[in-house]
Length: 211
Image 1 (cartoon, rainbow, N blue to C red):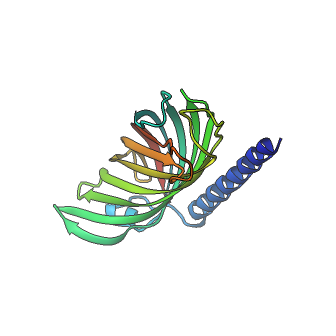
Image 2 (image 1 turned 90 degrees about the horizontal axis):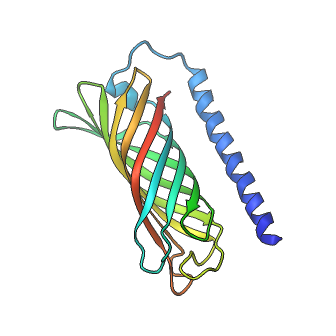
C-alpha cells in the first residue's frame, strides 16, 4: 500500500514539474515576437525546448542479469549559449541543460523509471547555419520501482549518468530534429551489495524549438 502511494505521489510530482517547464517554455515563446530569420549566433542567444525519445538496450551490467530495455521520453530545457569561441570555421558554445526522464522498463522485474539530469550541452555550429553538432554528458537522480528480485535493481532511489551526442538539423529558422546516440547508467551508488547497476545504449531522436 505504501509503495503504491509513493509511486502515485512521485508521478504527480513529475507531471507537475513537466507542466511547469512547458508553461515556462510557452511563456518565453509567446512573450517575444519571432524574427523572420535567425543566424547561428542569434539561435545561441535563445533558450531551446526539446522533446526526444530513445530506445536503449543493456550493454554491460554483470550484476543486473536481466535483458533490460528502456523506452525513454525526455523533456529538456537548454539555456542560451555561453563560453563561446570561434574554432574550425564555426562557433563553439556551452549551454546549461536540465532534462526530465520518463521511461518504460522491459526485460527486467521493474516497469518504470523517472529521473532528473543536469548537464552541459557542448555544441559546434558551422557558418552554413543549417545544423549543429552536440555532445552532452551529465547525470542526476531518479526513481525506479524496484521489486527485490535477484538480478534486478536493489532499491528505488538511484543515481544516473546520461550522455548523448549527435547532430541537430534545422528544418526552418525555429525548429530542428536531433539524431544521435545515447548512453544511460543508473545504480544505487553502492547502497546495496551487490549494486546491480545498469548500462544501456541506443539511438535517440528529438525535436527542438528555438524561442
